[in-house]
Every structure is written in C-alpha cells, then in structure tokens.
Length: 357
Image (cartoon, rainbow, N blue to C red; front, top):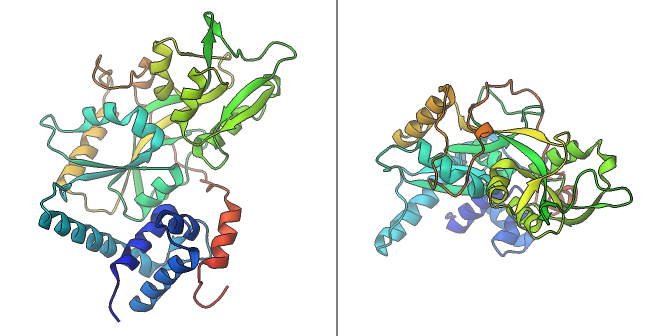
C-alpha cells in the first residue's frame, strides 16, 4: 500500500481548520470522503494520528511526531514542482508568522518594519487565522512565530513550559461610532427611550468574548444587535458607514479616527485593555532568520523608549499610548475554545473514529 499525497494534504488541512466538517468543506469534499482519507493515512501509518474525543480535534503523540514530517514532505514536493515549472517560490528560510486577521490588517506592516533586519533580507510568510486556530498552529509546529491579542485580565492558558512570549504593544478595545454633524451618531449611553444598534463579533471569536465581558454590566447602553461578523475590519467599515456601534481595537480604529470617520464613545467604563504578544515554542530550533526576528522583538520589549511609528511608514497610525510595552504578566487562567457544539457533534458523528466511541 502506497501513501497518497492527498492524504497528507487532508491531514494538514484537518489541523488547520480544527474539525472534520470545516476541513472537508475547505477541500471541497464530502464529510465521508474526507474521513476516509484520514482513516487511510492512519491505516498506512499503523496507528491513530488524531484524537477524535476532543473538540477542536487534537493530535495523538504519534500524530505530533508525524505532523512535522508531513509538513516537510508536502512543502518539499511543492517547492520541487515550482522549481521544475520555473516559478518563484518562497525560500525555505522564510519566517512563518501566524496571526489574527485584525493584526494582519492593522498592525503587521508597522511591526514587521521594526523587527526585520535593516537590509530587509528576511522573507516572511503570513498565515492569517482566527485566534484559536493560530494557537493550534503554533502548538503543532505549523508556524515559527505567533502574533496575537490577549486580554491581560483574562490571559490565555498557554503552557509556559512549552511556549514563551514577549510583550509587543498594549492596545484597548473600545466602542466607536460614526460622526453626525460633528457629534457621535450613537452616543453612549443613548438618550432616554433610544436603543443603540450594535455591530458585534460572534461569541466564538476572541474579541467577541472580550466584548461580551465588557458589556456584561452595561444594561444602560440599551444595545440591540443588528449585525454580527467575526471580521473586525468589516465591523469597522460598518461603523464608518453609520450603521451602529462596535467595540474595536485602537490599532485598527485609530486611522479612521484621525480622518474624522469615527469617534470613541462612552466615558471609558466599557473599554477593555488588550496586549499584543509574540509567541514561540521553547524547544524549537529556530532558523537564523527566526532568531533574528525574535531577538529584535526582545530588544524592543526591553527598551525604555521604543521608537514611535514614523509618519507614512505604514498604513496604521499607532496611538502614543500603544508604543510602550507593558511589563510581562503572569499567564495564568484558561483559554476557552469557541463554542461550536453543533459542529463538534457532527464531527463526532462522521469522523470515522477507530474503535468506536
């Protein structure tokens, strides 16, 4: 029995998406067809690679060991294909950075200009994920570095024996509204008898959970949900269009504030402190480019007066309050995965578990 490259790609896709349902949809396969690929790969290996009793799915010890080899095999074959076809492909020494869609849009360009070597010779591959998928990618070796938001008051429960981190920049999640005749279109609290149209993240998104905590004691705001979307950039555009109020990170909102397109509302009581952090695996053997980026980020974190954003140096104007790194905080607490119970039930029903349930 010979191995099929499609099996390896489906195995990697399963880890990327965290569930059989999502991975099958991404590869345009039916659930049973996708599950058969994973079962065939496990049969070829001779042991289970995926722990189907958890959601999101996790790897067995054998799966963790096999994952790195599968990544190298698939990427190596792709590189050879591109070489034969004469394509320009990303160098093997490229630094792979997983990050949230919000940070990819609102912050990465500024941060990368600060941490890359002066000669700019380090290639980079970006992997935008939702927050949970990004942590999974780091844990399973799918990226070199992770750039992610954390709420210091409720820090993620990462295993500090396996993962280390550096503070990058503080930020704050606050409510924003469009302007109307020089004043907030939707002030907070609203005038008596009026409701506030809310543009919200889903409860499964990291910023959605943070926002829900901020709103937990805000009955006086009279919030009425009108649109829900997990893409923060889309919520920001809806705010500038005057559709409603959304809780947005300052790094994303500030350029629109500077252009007079939106304004922070409320008296600060409903804001939440955030922090951008850079993570890596402790026991990984970083390439020279990865080590350069990490060491430069460490220097910036330890500096008393980090460099402010230069005018025109990036698409994001970072507020002065977001340029000084905070002290490192104790990473205690838990990280709750998005509540997609219906998807989990469907996965358990169709994942083709070896040995039954």
